[in-house]
Amino acid sequence: MGVRAELASPPAGAALVGVLCVGSVDDAAAGYGFYVDADGSFLVTREEPSGEATFLEQGRDPRIADTRRISITCVEELTGGTAITGWVDGIEIVGTTDADQVDGFDHAGIAIVPDRAGDAVTFTSVVARVPDEEWTP
Image (tube, rainbow, N blue to C red; front, side):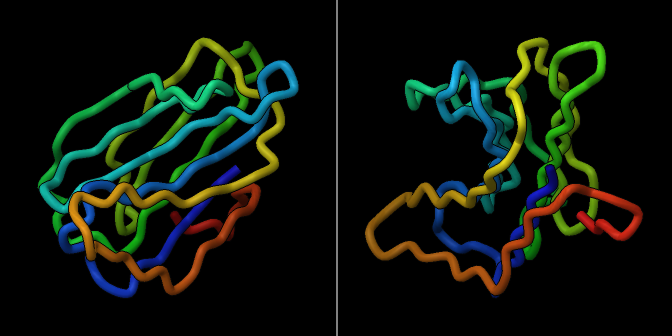
């Protein structure tokens, strides 16, 4: 599954803005998230059925500072595991693989983790689809 969220303007003040692919583990919701911060930092997480998040990758990339579009793809690999890729403004920022596998990505999500009261992010569109030759992250 691929999830793409367009932002009306780069997030100012919001601690994290993210997109998620959601499937299931043992019939409970689970998935992966790609989150970015206006300071250029990013996180890739595995979202557990318990609500806990496991950090798979984290780092900093200066190309994230003026984010207008954030995307994630989550692909179940034939040999097991899940390949997760995060993009900002169509540029691949991070790619990682989780040896555990979340089954059947059938839900998408967006997330805002505010840093302080009054922080806001406006999304102009959110698209979730199976990536194909017309997919643009």
